[in-house]
Length: 114
Image (cartoon, rainbow, N blue to C red; front, side, top):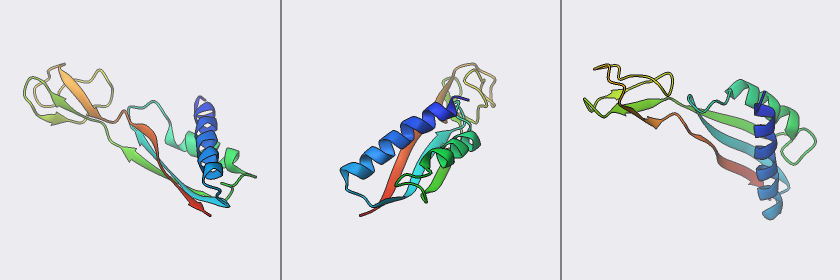
């Protein structure tokens, strides 16, 4: 489960930002996860819940925003909702589908108390 390593990296950045801002607590952590990112949201949330215990983020809420995959076809110009990187256009069947959303994985915000 690579989400453990990802959660470690997130907590390192979150706690580093909290320390840099002399926070007394982290109250919320926002994360955006694209459906094609390869990250399993529930596994990541579980790993973060385990890793925040006993830290400034102990009581922090974890807000996960799932970003649906979408792509624009280079042939017909229409938008499709692919389920993999190798999907074809749902309108014309062309393999020339450029993924425009769904690859995201980022910390979108960290709320702290000073």
